[in-house]
Image (cartoon, rainbow, N blue to C red; front, side):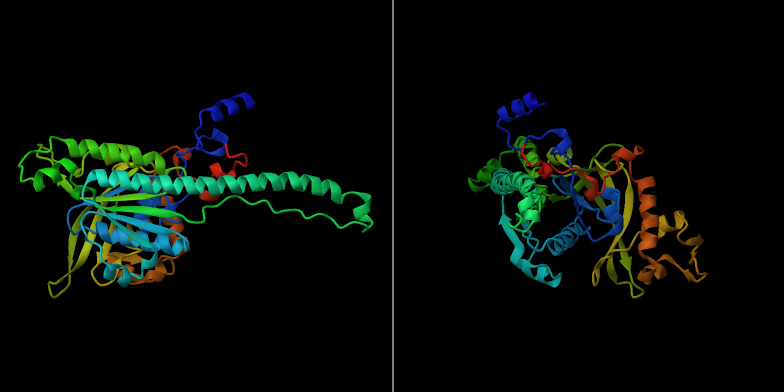
Length: 404
Protein backbone atom coordinates (compact mmCIF):
# COMPACT_ATOMS: atom_id res chain seq x y z
CA UNK A 1 0.00 0.00 0.00
CA UNK A 2 2.95 2.32 0.52
CA UNK A 3 3.46 2.48 -3.25
CA UNK A 4 -0.08 3.74 -3.80
CA UNK A 5 0.17 6.22 -0.91
CA UNK A 6 3.40 7.57 -2.40
CA UNK A 7 1.73 7.80 -5.81
CA UNK A 8 -1.12 9.84 -4.32
CA UNK A 9 1.33 12.19 -2.62
CA UNK A 10 2.96 12.81 -5.99
CA UNK A 11 -0.24 14.46 -7.21
CA UNK A 12 0.42 17.36 -4.87
CA UNK A 13 -3.26 17.40 -3.93
CA UNK A 14 -3.32 18.24 -0.21
CA UNK A 15 -6.96 17.21 0.08
CA UNK A 16 -6.50 13.72 -1.42
CA UNK A 17 -7.42 10.86 0.93
CA UNK A 18 -7.66 7.10 0.98
CA UNK A 19 -11.28 5.95 1.14
CA UNK A 20 -10.96 4.33 4.57
CA UNK A 21 -10.17 7.78 5.99
CA UNK A 22 -13.18 9.43 4.35
CA UNK A 23 -13.75 11.21 1.05
CA UNK A 24 -14.66 14.77 0.13
CA UNK A 25 -18.29 13.84 -0.52
CA UNK A 26 -18.87 12.76 3.10
CA UNK A 27 -21.24 14.83 5.23
CA UNK A 28 -20.23 15.24 8.87
CA UNK A 29 -23.20 17.26 10.07
CA UNK A 30 -26.29 19.29 9.28
CA UNK A 31 -27.47 22.84 9.97
CA UNK A 32 -30.82 23.08 11.76
CA UNK A 33 -33.50 24.97 9.78
CA UNK A 34 -35.75 25.56 12.79
CA UNK A 35 -38.46 23.16 11.53
CA UNK A 36 -38.54 19.45 12.39
CA UNK A 37 -40.32 18.50 9.18
CA UNK A 38 -38.08 20.59 6.92
CA UNK A 39 -35.04 19.02 8.58
CA UNK A 40 -36.50 15.59 7.87
CA UNK A 41 -37.35 16.45 4.27
CA UNK A 42 -33.78 17.47 3.45
CA UNK A 43 -31.74 15.03 5.53
CA UNK A 44 -33.98 12.09 6.45
CA UNK A 45 -33.87 12.78 10.17
CA UNK A 46 -35.23 15.18 12.76
CA UNK A 47 -32.54 14.89 15.40
CA UNK A 48 -29.38 16.56 14.17
CA UNK A 49 -30.76 16.88 10.63
CA UNK A 50 -31.30 19.79 8.26
CA UNK A 51 -29.09 21.43 5.66
CA UNK A 52 -26.00 19.29 4.87
CA UNK A 53 -22.54 20.62 5.58
CA UNK A 54 -20.10 20.83 2.70
CA UNK A 55 -22.88 20.94 0.09
CA UNK A 56 -25.00 23.47 -1.81
CA UNK A 57 -28.66 23.77 -0.82
CA UNK A 58 -31.08 25.91 -2.84
CA UNK A 59 -34.32 27.28 -1.37
CA UNK A 60 -36.58 28.75 -4.04
CA UNK A 61 -40.06 30.21 -4.12
CA UNK A 62 -42.26 33.10 -5.14
CA UNK A 63 -42.00 36.40 -3.22
CA UNK A 64 -43.29 36.11 0.33
CA UNK A 65 -42.90 32.34 0.64
CA UNK A 66 -40.47 32.61 3.55
CA UNK A 67 -37.09 32.05 1.87
CA UNK A 68 -35.36 34.78 3.85
CA UNK A 69 -37.27 33.76 6.98
CA UNK A 70 -35.90 30.21 6.77
CA UNK A 71 -32.44 31.55 5.96
CA UNK A 72 -32.37 33.77 9.06
CA UNK A 73 -33.67 30.95 11.25
CA UNK A 74 -30.91 28.66 9.99
CA UNK A 75 -28.30 31.35 10.60
CA UNK A 76 -29.59 31.80 14.17
CA UNK A 77 -29.32 28.07 14.94
CA UNK A 78 -25.92 27.74 13.26
CA UNK A 79 -24.40 30.55 15.33
CA UNK A 80 -26.02 29.26 18.54
CA UNK A 81 -24.67 25.76 17.89
CA UNK A 82 -21.17 27.04 17.02
CA UNK A 83 -20.12 29.84 19.42
CA UNK A 84 -16.81 30.36 17.58
CA UNK A 85 -18.36 30.14 14.10
CA UNK A 86 -19.47 32.82 11.64
CA UNK A 87 -21.82 33.35 8.72
CA UNK A 88 -21.04 35.22 5.50
CA UNK A 89 -24.09 36.59 3.67
CA UNK A 90 -23.55 37.32 -0.01
CA UNK A 91 -26.50 39.55 -0.85
CA UNK A 92 -27.76 41.04 -4.08
CA UNK A 93 -31.21 42.20 -2.96
CA UNK A 94 -30.42 44.25 0.20
CA UNK A 95 -33.39 42.45 1.75
CA UNK A 96 -31.79 41.58 5.12
CA UNK A 97 -31.42 44.41 7.61
CA UNK A 98 -29.57 44.71 10.90
CA UNK A 99 -32.89 45.21 12.71
CA UNK A 100 -34.24 41.93 11.29
CA UNK A 101 -31.27 40.08 12.74
CA UNK A 102 -31.45 41.85 16.11
CA UNK A 103 -35.17 41.04 16.38
CA UNK A 104 -34.34 37.37 15.82
CA UNK A 105 -31.57 37.50 18.43
CA UNK A 106 -28.84 36.73 15.89
CA UNK A 107 -25.30 37.58 17.04
CA UNK A 108 -24.53 40.39 14.58
CA UNK A 109 -20.86 40.38 15.63
CA UNK A 110 -20.43 37.10 13.74
CA UNK A 111 -22.40 37.88 10.58
CA UNK A 112 -20.48 39.37 7.64
CA UNK A 113 -22.15 40.96 4.63
CA UNK A 114 -20.68 40.88 1.12
CA UNK A 115 -22.82 42.87 -1.34
CA UNK A 116 -22.50 41.78 -4.97
CA UNK A 117 -24.12 42.93 -8.20
CA UNK A 118 -22.90 40.38 -10.72
CA UNK A 119 -22.40 36.63 -10.96
CA UNK A 120 -18.69 37.27 -11.55
CA UNK A 121 -18.47 39.11 -8.20
CA UNK A 122 -20.24 36.22 -6.48
CA UNK A 123 -18.03 33.55 -8.05
CA UNK A 124 -14.71 35.31 -7.51
CA UNK A 125 -15.30 36.61 -4.00
CA UNK A 126 -16.76 33.39 -2.61
CA UNK A 127 -13.94 31.40 -4.23
CA UNK A 128 -11.39 33.69 -2.53
CA UNK A 129 -13.16 33.29 0.83
CA UNK A 130 -13.07 29.52 0.57
CA UNK A 131 -9.48 29.39 -0.68
CA UNK A 132 -8.29 31.47 2.30
CA UNK A 133 -10.36 29.41 4.75
CA UNK A 134 -9.25 26.05 3.36
CA UNK A 135 -5.58 27.07 3.31
CA UNK A 136 -5.65 28.17 6.96
CA UNK A 137 -7.68 25.19 8.14
CA UNK A 138 -5.47 22.72 6.29
CA UNK A 139 -2.37 24.27 7.87
CA UNK A 140 -3.97 24.04 11.33
CA UNK A 141 -5.02 20.43 10.77
CA UNK A 142 -1.61 19.47 9.41
CA UNK A 143 0.13 21.05 12.43
CA UNK A 144 -2.21 19.26 14.82
CA UNK A 145 -1.72 15.90 13.10
CA UNK A 146 2.06 16.36 13.13
CA UNK A 147 1.90 17.10 16.85
CA UNK A 148 -0.27 14.04 17.48
CA UNK A 149 2.09 11.85 15.44
CA UNK A 150 5.01 13.02 17.59
CA UNK A 151 3.02 12.42 20.77
CA UNK A 152 2.15 8.89 19.65
CA UNK A 153 5.86 8.19 19.19
CA UNK A 154 6.69 9.87 22.53
CA UNK A 155 3.99 7.85 24.28
CA UNK A 156 5.46 4.58 23.02
CA UNK A 157 8.85 5.56 24.41
CA UNK A 158 7.30 6.81 27.65
CA UNK A 159 5.32 3.60 28.16
CA UNK A 160 8.48 1.56 27.66
CA UNK A 161 10.42 3.82 30.04
CA UNK A 162 7.69 3.70 32.71
CA UNK A 163 7.97 -0.09 32.84
CA UNK A 164 11.63 0.02 33.82
CA UNK A 165 12.73 -1.11 37.26
CA UNK A 166 14.06 2.35 38.14
CA UNK A 167 10.61 3.87 37.70
CA UNK A 168 8.88 1.03 39.58
CA UNK A 169 11.35 1.50 42.47
CA UNK A 170 10.59 5.24 42.45
CA UNK A 171 14.18 6.09 41.66
CA UNK A 172 13.08 7.89 38.51
CA UNK A 173 9.87 9.79 37.82
CA UNK A 174 7.58 8.32 35.14
CA UNK A 175 7.29 10.20 31.89
CA UNK A 176 4.05 11.91 30.92
CA UNK A 177 1.63 10.06 28.62
CA UNK A 178 0.03 12.58 26.27
CA UNK A 179 -3.68 12.45 25.45
CA UNK A 180 -4.17 11.93 21.73
CA UNK A 181 -7.03 14.05 20.38
CA UNK A 182 -8.76 14.36 17.03
CA UNK A 183 -8.45 17.61 15.14
CA UNK A 184 -11.61 19.65 15.19
CA UNK A 185 -12.53 22.75 13.25
CA UNK A 186 -12.30 25.65 15.73
CA UNK A 187 -14.03 28.15 13.44
CA UNK A 188 -16.82 26.61 11.32
CA UNK A 189 -18.62 28.96 8.96
CA UNK A 190 -21.57 29.02 6.61
CA UNK A 191 -22.21 30.98 3.40
CA UNK A 192 -25.69 32.26 2.51
CA UNK A 193 -26.54 33.83 -0.85
CA UNK A 194 -29.67 35.98 -1.08
CA UNK A 195 -30.38 35.72 -3.93
CA UNK A 196 -28.82 34.23 -7.05
CA UNK A 197 -31.76 35.25 -9.24
CA UNK A 198 -31.08 38.96 -8.73
CA UNK A 199 -27.50 38.93 -9.99
CA UNK A 200 -26.66 40.31 -13.42
CA UNK A 201 -23.56 39.69 -15.52
CA UNK A 202 -20.78 42.22 -16.05
CA UNK A 203 -21.88 42.45 -19.69
CA UNK A 204 -25.43 43.29 -18.68
CA UNK A 205 -24.18 45.83 -16.15
CA UNK A 206 -21.85 47.47 -18.71
CA UNK A 207 -24.66 47.68 -21.26
CA UNK A 208 -26.85 49.45 -18.72
CA UNK A 209 -24.14 51.95 -17.82
CA UNK A 210 -23.53 52.68 -21.51
CA UNK A 211 -27.26 52.96 -22.31
CA UNK A 212 -27.06 49.95 -24.63
CA UNK A 213 -30.16 47.81 -25.02
CA UNK A 214 -28.34 44.61 -25.89
CA UNK A 215 -29.34 41.15 -24.78
CA UNK A 216 -27.03 39.15 -22.49
CA UNK A 217 -27.17 36.20 -24.93
CA UNK A 218 -27.13 33.56 -22.22
CA UNK A 219 -23.84 34.70 -20.70
CA UNK A 220 -25.32 34.98 -17.20
CA UNK A 221 -26.47 31.35 -17.15
CA UNK A 222 -23.05 30.13 -18.29
CA UNK A 223 -21.41 32.23 -15.59
CA UNK A 224 -23.69 30.77 -12.92
CA UNK A 225 -22.70 27.26 -14.00
CA UNK A 226 -19.07 28.33 -13.78
CA UNK A 227 -19.62 29.84 -10.33
CA UNK A 228 -21.22 26.74 -8.86
CA UNK A 229 -18.58 24.48 -10.46
CA UNK A 230 -15.75 26.55 -8.97
CA UNK A 231 -17.31 26.74 -5.54
CA UNK A 232 -18.63 23.18 -5.05
CA UNK A 233 -15.31 21.39 -4.52
CA UNK A 234 -14.07 24.14 -2.20
CA UNK A 235 -16.96 23.58 0.22
CA UNK A 236 -16.20 19.93 0.94
CA UNK A 237 -12.74 19.83 2.60
CA UNK A 238 -13.85 21.60 5.77
CA UNK A 239 -17.61 21.10 5.53
CA UNK A 240 -18.84 24.60 4.67
CA UNK A 241 -22.61 24.67 3.99
CA UNK A 242 -23.74 27.02 1.22
CA UNK A 243 -27.40 28.08 1.06
CA UNK A 244 -28.75 29.77 -2.06
CA UNK A 245 -32.12 31.49 -2.25
CA UNK A 246 -33.87 32.21 -5.51
CA UNK A 247 -37.24 32.94 -7.07
CA UNK A 248 -39.17 30.48 -9.22
CA UNK A 249 -41.19 30.93 -12.38
CA UNK A 250 -43.65 28.68 -14.16
CA UNK A 251 -42.94 27.37 -17.66
CA UNK A 252 -45.39 27.97 -20.51
CA UNK A 253 -45.72 24.29 -21.40
CA UNK A 254 -49.03 22.43 -21.45
CA UNK A 255 -48.10 20.90 -18.09
CA UNK A 256 -46.26 23.85 -16.60
CA UNK A 257 -43.67 23.30 -13.90
CA UNK A 258 -41.72 25.46 -11.49
CA UNK A 259 -38.19 26.45 -12.55
CA UNK A 260 -35.54 27.99 -10.30
CA UNK A 261 -34.38 31.36 -11.61
CA UNK A 262 -30.69 32.09 -11.90
CA UNK A 263 -29.80 29.52 -14.53
CA UNK A 264 -29.28 25.78 -14.45
CA UNK A 265 -26.00 25.90 -12.51
CA UNK A 266 -27.53 25.27 -9.07
CA UNK A 267 -29.64 22.48 -10.55
CA UNK A 268 -26.48 20.56 -11.48
CA UNK A 269 -24.44 21.17 -8.33
CA UNK A 270 -26.92 21.61 -5.45
CA UNK A 271 -27.45 18.54 -3.30
CA UNK A 272 -30.90 19.73 -2.28
CA UNK A 273 -33.35 22.05 -4.02
CA UNK A 274 -36.51 22.87 -2.07
CA UNK A 275 -39.40 24.70 -3.71
CA UNK A 276 -41.76 26.71 -1.51
CA UNK A 277 -45.45 27.35 -2.25
CA UNK A 278 -47.49 29.52 0.13
CA UNK A 279 -51.11 29.40 1.27
CA UNK A 280 -52.35 32.37 3.29
CA UNK A 281 -53.70 32.04 6.83
CA UNK A 282 -56.53 34.39 7.88
CA UNK A 283 -57.98 35.07 11.33
CA UNK A 284 -61.65 35.55 12.17
CA UNK A 285 -61.35 39.28 11.42
CA UNK A 286 -60.24 38.38 7.89
CA UNK A 287 -56.70 39.64 8.55
CA UNK A 288 -53.78 37.76 7.09
CA UNK A 289 -51.64 36.45 9.94
CA UNK A 290 -49.13 34.26 8.10
CA UNK A 291 -48.68 31.45 5.60
CA UNK A 292 -48.72 27.69 5.50
CA UNK A 293 -45.86 26.66 3.21
CA UNK A 294 -45.73 23.49 1.14
CA UNK A 295 -42.10 22.43 0.76
CA UNK A 296 -41.39 20.23 -2.23
CA UNK A 297 -38.03 18.50 -2.69
CA UNK A 298 -37.26 19.24 -6.34
CA UNK A 299 -33.83 17.59 -6.06
CA UNK A 300 -32.42 15.48 -3.25
CA UNK A 301 -29.19 13.60 -2.61
CA UNK A 302 -30.19 12.34 0.83
CA UNK A 303 -33.96 11.93 0.50
CA UNK A 304 -36.35 11.08 -2.33
CA UNK A 305 -37.08 13.73 -4.94
CA UNK A 306 -40.71 14.78 -5.02
CA UNK A 307 -41.16 14.37 -1.25
CA UNK A 308 -43.21 17.07 0.44
CA UNK A 309 -43.83 18.52 3.88
CA UNK A 310 -45.69 21.46 5.38
CA UNK A 311 -44.29 24.23 7.54
CA UNK A 312 -45.91 27.34 8.99
CA UNK A 313 -44.69 30.93 9.27
CA UNK A 314 -46.78 33.34 11.35
CA UNK A 315 -46.06 37.05 11.19
CA UNK A 316 -45.92 37.42 14.98
CA UNK A 317 -44.24 34.21 16.13
CA UNK A 318 -42.22 33.25 13.05
CA UNK A 319 -41.33 29.75 11.83
CA UNK A 320 -43.00 26.97 13.80
CA UNK A 321 -40.72 24.20 15.02
CA UNK A 322 -43.54 21.63 15.29
CA UNK A 323 -45.95 22.40 12.43
CA UNK A 324 -46.47 19.44 10.10
CA UNK A 325 -45.89 16.75 12.74
CA UNK A 326 -49.55 15.75 13.21
CA UNK A 327 -50.12 13.72 10.03
CA UNK A 328 -46.92 11.61 10.35
CA UNK A 329 -47.63 11.03 14.04
CA UNK A 330 -51.16 9.84 13.30
CA UNK A 331 -49.93 7.50 10.55
CA UNK A 332 -47.48 5.75 12.87
CA UNK A 333 -50.00 5.55 15.71
CA UNK A 334 -48.54 8.15 18.07
CA UNK A 335 -52.02 9.68 18.19
CA UNK A 336 -55.35 8.39 16.90
CA UNK A 337 -57.22 10.42 14.30
CA UNK A 338 -60.95 10.06 13.68
CA UNK A 339 -62.10 12.78 11.29
CA UNK A 340 -61.31 16.12 12.91
CA UNK A 341 -60.80 14.54 16.35
CA UNK A 342 -57.44 13.43 17.74
CA UNK A 343 -57.10 11.06 20.70
CA UNK A 344 -53.97 10.87 22.85
CA UNK A 345 -52.67 7.60 24.35
CA UNK A 346 -54.06 8.69 27.75
CA UNK A 347 -57.56 9.06 26.27
CA UNK A 348 -57.70 12.87 26.07
CA UNK A 349 -59.33 14.22 22.91
CA UNK A 350 -58.97 17.51 21.00
CA UNK A 351 -60.75 18.74 17.90
CA UNK A 352 -58.79 20.13 14.99
CA UNK A 353 -55.12 20.00 14.03
CA UNK A 354 -54.51 23.59 15.19
CA UNK A 355 -55.59 22.60 18.69
CA UNK A 356 -52.73 20.08 18.77
CA UNK A 357 -50.17 22.69 17.76
CA UNK A 358 -51.29 24.81 20.70
CA UNK A 359 -50.09 21.95 22.95
CA UNK A 360 -46.34 21.69 22.19
CA UNK A 361 -45.86 19.29 25.10
CA UNK A 362 -47.53 16.63 22.94
CA UNK A 363 -44.52 16.54 20.62
CA UNK A 364 -42.03 15.09 23.10
CA UNK A 365 -38.96 12.97 22.25
CA UNK A 366 -41.02 9.78 22.09
CA UNK A 367 -43.41 11.38 19.60
CA UNK A 368 -40.53 12.76 17.52
CA UNK A 369 -38.83 9.36 17.39
CA UNK A 370 -42.06 7.93 15.99
CA UNK A 371 -42.17 10.68 13.35
CA UNK A 372 -38.53 10.01 12.48
CA UNK A 373 -39.46 6.41 11.69
CA UNK A 374 -42.19 7.77 9.39
CA UNK A 375 -39.60 10.02 7.74
CA UNK A 376 -37.27 7.07 7.09
CA UNK A 377 -40.13 5.11 5.53
CA UNK A 378 -41.49 7.97 3.42
CA UNK A 379 -38.55 10.27 2.62
CA UNK A 380 -35.46 8.08 2.62
CA UNK A 381 -34.28 5.70 -0.10
CA UNK A 382 -35.10 2.01 0.25
CA UNK A 383 -31.54 0.86 0.81
CA UNK A 384 -30.64 1.50 4.43
CA UNK A 385 -27.08 2.27 3.36
CA UNK A 386 -28.40 5.36 1.55
CA UNK A 387 -29.86 6.81 4.75
CA UNK A 388 -27.54 9.50 6.22
CA UNK A 389 -25.32 8.05 8.94
CA UNK A 390 -25.12 9.65 12.36
CA UNK A 391 -22.09 11.91 12.71
CA UNK A 392 -20.54 9.74 15.45
CA UNK A 393 -20.59 6.72 13.13
CA UNK A 394 -18.75 8.40 10.27
CA UNK A 395 -15.06 8.15 9.51
CA UNK A 396 -13.65 11.64 9.12
CA UNK A 397 -10.74 12.66 6.86
CA UNK A 398 -9.07 14.51 9.76
CA UNK A 399 -8.76 11.23 11.69
CA UNK A 400 -5.81 10.33 9.47
CA UNK A 401 -2.73 11.29 11.49
CA UNK A 402 -0.46 11.24 8.46
CA UNK A 403 -2.47 14.01 6.81
CA UNK A 404 -2.68 12.06 3.53
